[in-house]
Length: 316
Ligand SMILES: Nc1ncnc2c1ncn2[C@@H]1O[C@H](COP(=O)(O)OP(=O)(O)OP(=O)(O)O)[C@@H](O)[C@H]1O
Ligand SMILES: [Mg+2]
Image (cartoon, rainbow, N blue to C red; front, side, top):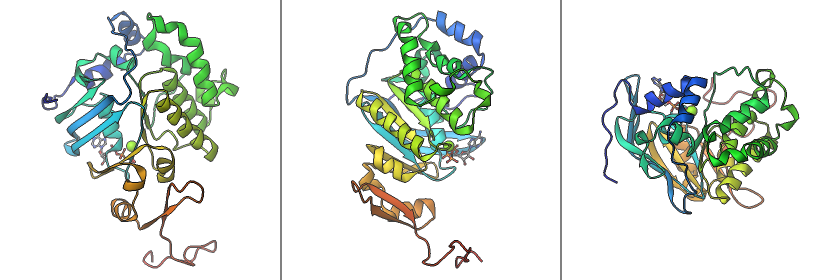
């Protein structure tokens, strides 16, 4: 692929798509009328989304520079790195939601900017890191919104099943009729995930889906990611918990300062030296007692800040 995208304009294709999506109901109705090519499944091993030499500038700052990353069908790809590294920006680029200054993004084999909003919504589902939307809807209605892109297509026959399955998988059926706005943070996160799952796209992009979740539901979400990958989807998940990435991802990509510094199987990427440098925090990497997946733990001084709050040398 040698196509290059032009420099960022004030209103590039991604920004225009976001405007359509922001139009809410009117935008969705317009999208339903727009001609759409309904996608079939991508072949195993195919690339579902790819960033090539991507640079993104936000507020005058280059926040991504020269990033190459592919999300492959049948694979869980974990995107990790410190706060501000550019994970959400890269995630938005892979979703076709941000205009790049240099390089290009391909979704399902086509330059992202060539897809319209309605066609993109049939190919990738996005769970953003945070949503400022205060939905005046019930949980069941919020999850059903994930089906909106399929309205008017043969796949709409599956709406009820897709919604029920997504709610069961995320364990939110118990509050199906409650207002979304009346849920706890973790409950809302699971409902938002259910909405993305109900969309049933071949590419699933989840930005920190486990951040607000308890231990049980963190494991549950990563098991869902594995199941989706096994069923032939490409899953990209942004995580801060490196233990979850090690246990569940096929590949881990590490971003630091807007650049990709590692991309490979967890055992080869999650090394103490690399992580200590990237996170500016000394860590040790130990084999998990069951299974041996890398466990990343911070180095703490023996007898350091214990229950009585003993001071750590250097923090004084
Ligand atoms: N709209 C914006 N204008 C200017 N700078 C921005 C904007 N959005 C993000 N940034 C900056 O871009 C950099 C990357 O942000 P990004 O949200 O991609 O980081 P992240 O790796 O997802 O971090 P976190 O782990 O905190 O979610 C940060 O330094 C951030 O301050
Ligand atoms: Mg982020």
